Image (cartoon, rainbow, N blue to C red):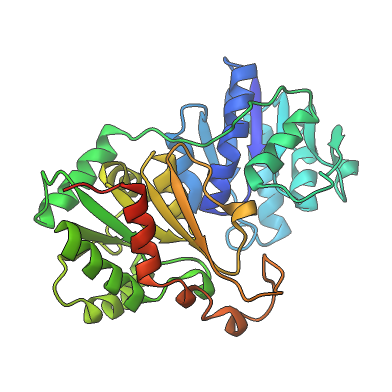
Length: 341
């Protein structure tokens, strides 16, 4: 049996869809599951045991033109025949591509896309956490849902080797305990201030004498430089731009704790089972909060009377996360007893 899962676009979305993919695999254990997703999600998808292969598709870059999209249809047809497809994306054009690719059974939420689907499911009436949103689609397709769904991800030996190499280069290989900070996020208002990360590093260093490993993409280098300027005594090591998503997962799997804003790496951390502090401002933890196998504390701030998730101007939400103080984060870590000397 050959099944397509047409994924949503972001790293966090990938984790939110993992419980649904796992459920499809449970129902059809011998099926080949092919995920269609942007290149940024490829590593994570291939690491999941339920996923057989990944085909890259991105409407904003490589497949902007209809000529490229029809070429993608030809590729899908050449790889067929396909028995089923699950459309997790809300895109009408993606539904059309699946129909043109000759997939026999096409499942998805039907609003605006029903013409291109063979099995349309009604959208949930209330807002749901995205994990539950994707699972509700499967409920509408006759699946029995798990009681407490969560996402997780195995770590490969190769990824562990890469992570251990980074720790060795940083001079902390073999340390029993270290903490990771992730500085970046795909929207500026979701980033905790660099000086707050620096102050938290000082508090952790004063109380537990632990190293802080700072992660981020190459584009987060200015945030790392800003943080480093505010650090006085804490032992802080940056691995900015040095990890792929797989080696980042391996690094987090060995950490005592991860602190991050609402970001894909935050979801990687909780998927690894690592205790995590997740900082939320203009986005809603009820919709996109941590739901991995690891324990997480969510700290949030939004001005009174503002609807969350916030969809206004970036400048209007720029300072919200700054209202969560380093002391608040430290106190949450202390209360949980996650770190021991």
